[in-house]
Length: 185
Image (tube, rainbow, N blue to C red; front, side, top):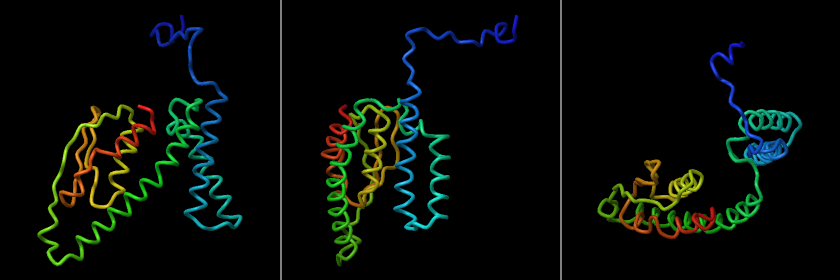
């Protein structure tokens, strides 16, 4: 009797086990590698051989070790649609960031700035169910000047710090609705 049999550590796998195929796992890692390399090139701004080789090596290392974290369930048929919806969300988010920047600029240069700034924390429950959707929502809130996501719990309760009342008035609102549509929740 082997040590594993004595401790009963072996887990039987049923013939209907629906784990991700090796091809899908490889595609997920390749996609993570490509995303990381594009970001590396954009952020480094250097296209000489040394920096490109360093970028390829670093991105391959990260994708190899943690490529399954970005796409935990591997790649499925809905992923291209999700990316298209995400790309469509970006211009709207950039518009919200611009509007919020103008509002914070107004507050900063207003003669009664100290009267207008009213920092407070608002709390609300989100209808988003997946961790990725909640994370996208939390990051979108934080990217918008005048608001910072302080916490999100497992049940979807958000706490957001706002610089003034108007900054938090629209939350969860349209941003949550757009993220709901994006992740088809």
